[in-house]
Length: 286
Image 1 (cartoon, rainbow, N blue to C red):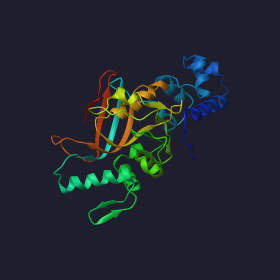
Image 2: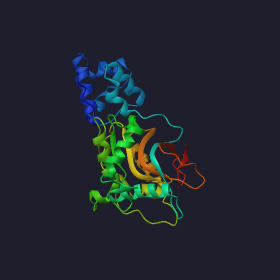
Image 3: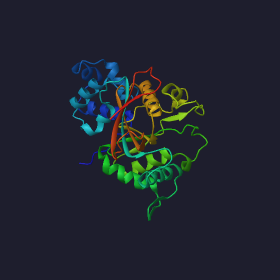
Image 4: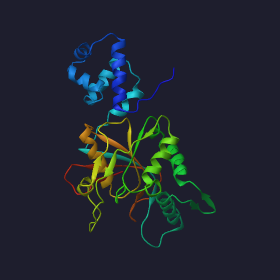
């Protein structure tokens, strides 16, 4: 049997309706069996709103829907009000007097940002985004099945930019092509250019310019960016998703993380970003 992946909450609602009708149940009968309101079932089937995660889980299991179809709509629990679980391909070291290896990694980041070939010693990688996608899938295979890659908008605004100037969009498309039943959704845009500050912009600064372009929750959201520094942009994107009813952890996939000289350099790193809604910058662990 071929299983068609679900690409939006509207598609999930249609599938729930078909399964309910196939079993000869009315919305009221299904709701009473699960101790839900009929309105909650109706809103799900119409693609308007998802039930609470535990209720959605019980409903899908009651109808016998394969887990892979609906698990992407249920966030993982988090210790923070907002949290992003970041997976990083490599690390990025800023400053002068870099080692040969650090210079090599800097060239990779610049190639991802510019779209130009990456010169790795004697080898030349013509498409750095496709090459990065292959390595990301090898390092983090769980992020490449039935996932929705959402590019993080650039700070200068995305409306007047082409693909070549928007690295996170090009990365998202490369990831989707490398994955299975994956898709790209440009769920965020900048309402205006991010204003310059003396230090790194905080989460509130990012939220002031970030807006949603779609009122749906998409399954298995993975935020995509090139480099994560403090993580304010990723946390702002995750916070915007709470307007759609998302509560919990959001996944992210980035090419590199900025490290300080005191940090141990690691490839294939994972970190957690947390924010309580008031701090200027998120906390970072891992």
